[in-house]
Length: 455
Image (cartoon, rainbow, N blue to C red; front, side, top):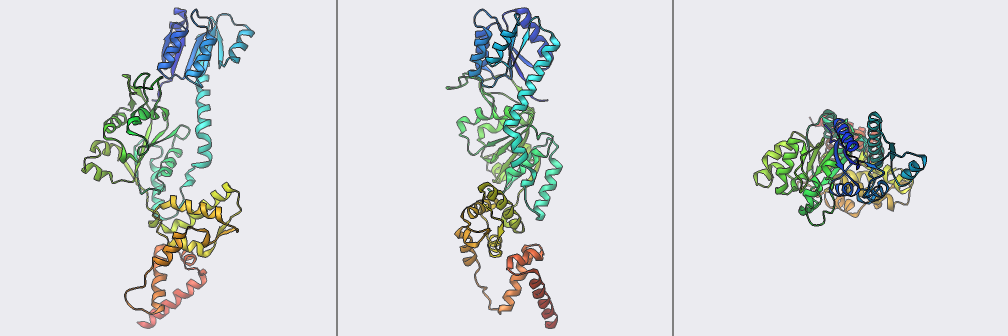
């Protein structure tokens, strides 16, 4: 079940106020009631709301002044104005002051229900359009995962199998391998795709702020907490919360995260209320969590709770056959972004890219291509456009064999090694060797014939 929307009702008429509170509570909303304008503002300072219903005429503070003050306490909060003196003038005045809509007294309960439902839905859609829709359509499509190596095919299969489950997923891999892209692929391939994808960087948040950021806080929970605030778990309600670098989670927060995963509810800092959240959790780490458990740095029960489905993301050096595909993908991305008509790579450039070890993985490759596009003065990426360490490692990283051998034997071994690295893909091997496919076929045929003669 998703987190219930919180409604604030302010009316000095106890009969109207209690009736509204009762009807809206039965509709499944969490309702806070205020008997006047000042109490309404105090409640707004103490707790975040999704919608306020405010009477226009109240003795201590009228509805329009409450509306103006609410805009500074909780920006973007939609407000419905109630009035027993409905005229075109009051309607115009309320809307101009920032009210989302107004309702006349005596109100019809069905109309109240419909307007509340419509207002909350409009707010939800506005939030999603603003924060996630463009990201979903353009930047973080599943197609952002690039590769045809056997390791990547296995990842595609796992993403497809777990996407529509609510199972917790643990993504493992070195820094820069694309763990967040895998998490986003799972989210956007799931039934949660139209809801938030919220990233929590466990390594970047200071420990003193972590609990408040993750679970939110109540007003006055600590110095500087001037109003209540939702945490990242509540923000991701209905969607996915991605806990990046989970191995860095402070020990004091590990039992609280475990409780949240087990109970599917959070408790804000300084609060006593248990707030239900419907969130799918995906965690990622470049650390050996099993080893962290053995060292006593990570709770074993939390490890097992997170490690329901594991997706290992290989280092780029383990799937070098994907380098040309990734390079072309990043070339398109950055040539469009920089508005430079760079369309491809020189053969020697691809050979350098495919021979490099990529300690920074896919992220390092993207940065190298982005740099090359920026420096390129022609329509293709040349070797001199690449970072110096790529060509330096190519020159220095291949020592001569210890045992003496003929040039033909060295060529035979090198061709066999390149074919092994490309999984037998002759077109790809020919590109790395800097020859065309027909020449490679002739070399292989000659080597096969020589092998027969030797026997």
